[in-house]
Image (cartoon, rainbow over all chains, first blue to last red; front, side, top):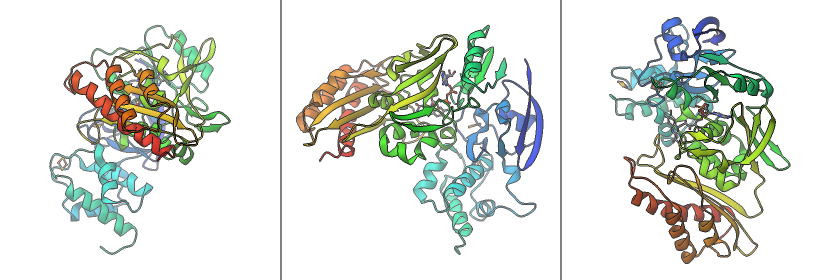
Amino acid sequence: MASVSVSTTLNTDEVEFLCQADETLLDVLRNRLGLMGAKEGCGTGDCGACSVIMDGRVVCSCLVLGAEAQGKTIETIEGMAQGSELHPLQKKFIEHAALQCGVCTPGFLMAAKALLDANPSPTEEEIRFWLAGNLCRCTGYDKIVRAVADAAAEMRGEAS
Amino acid sequence: MRYERPETIGDATALLASAKGRAFVLAGGTDLLVRMKSDAFEADMVVDIKAVAGMSDISETADGFEIGAAVPCAALGEHAGLVAAWPGVVEAANLIGSTQIQGRCTMSGNLCNASPAADSVPALVAAGARVRIAGPDGTRIVPVEDVPQAPGKTTLKKGEFIAAILLPKPAQRSGDAYLRFTPRTEMDIAVVGVGVQLALDAKGVVETARVALGAVGPKVVLAEQAADTIIGTALDDAALEALAEACSAASNPIDDKRGTAAFRKHVAGVLARRAAKIAYERAGGK
Ligand SMILES: Cc1cc2nc3c(=O)[nH]c(=O)nc-3n(C[C@H](O)[C@H](O)[C@H](O)COP(=O)(O)OP(=O)(O)OC[C@H]3O[C@@H](n4cnc5c(N)ncnc54)[C@H](O)[C@@H]3O)c2cc1C
Ligand code: FES
Ligand code: FES
């Protein structure tokens, strides 16, 4: 199988890698670039654990080829905190105990970030619909939804 | 397997036409990548069309709208003009999958995957949409309903791919709607899907109508006799009843784990009635 040479912007760094033509972006991130944040829950687009933001849209990295990252801007969970300063969403997830085992968490955080980038004041219904492609077997979702709403409020400068 | 990313339509058709084994167009990959992971799947080449000029554009033309084959469904819902003109088509496309899937999936991929349950297809057929097909011998334009042939099979010839979906300019006093039945509200496959488009005269009488049914046969059904039942009516109860019966009659579904044939026939009628009412209101009827 022919290798493909790819250059992309990953969490503001210029990155180059070689991958197989049929290799997914998720496998490239985890196996070639050492970024273990995105998880493989299903590999078929159903669970959202592999969510990353590509050119501003949240996508399942298990359904993107590594080769498709050419010239794109990719954001993963590893780029979310600024140094040791956690993103408001990360802080609120901890505060609201919106995670238990944590397997779904990077995916939820990336999807929620894409939501708040597009819509700084989502309703509860909008949050629930937006996150419908992210599955969590532990929390029962309620705490996640509250954490996202609270982070949105904080980012709008409203006291919670 | 080779991965190719051509930048012109000519290069894309040349690659597809010259491929030795099986070549696949890659749009959003939300069907293709799932298939690629199965052991039974074999591809010699994947031709990513997203870098082809114009493929990612929605343009308003004198005749209506032209939607490039690589436009993700999320972008349809962000296009105010398209939402205003074809709310049913946009709603159908926006039902596909989750936020993550929406960022990638395309209507052309939905059509070419040729699943009988594809959500955007009945809405496009009801709207009278056509596709522009590019191929080694030039381009041809065909109605959407002529693209799927059987589950997983299209009428496209080797070297051909869909370059754009063409939606007409909506007629005066017209409206469209799409409804599907799924056991869950999100992330599920249609058990039945119904698209309706109609146009009214100044008195609110249905002048033209198109009704399309999904998941009730091997491919989308353009139910012309069903549409005839509401033409010339003001969509009163008797007309709606006749529409529902005609849609059930036009359905030829199978029993499967998602629903029985009898249930699907019934639901086709129920959804047609509801979709017709929405389309009628959107057309300005009361
Ligand atoms: C989690 C999940 C949920 C889903 N939910 C739904 C749903 O609710 N409703 C629904 O209808 N579908 C659903 N799907 C299926 C899929 O997302 C849609 O069919 C989607 O529209 C496919 O578009 P795509 O651009 O991703 O196609 P791709 O995967 O890129 O392509 C699909 C097929 O069409 C061919 N193709 C693509 N573009 C062209 C073209 N321009 N010309 C010729 N051939 C082409 C490809 O070679 C391939 O065979 C879901 C999929 C997933 C993974
Ligand atoms: S691993 Fe990608 S959606 Fe589940
Ligand atoms: S915290 Fe365990 S799956 Fe969500």
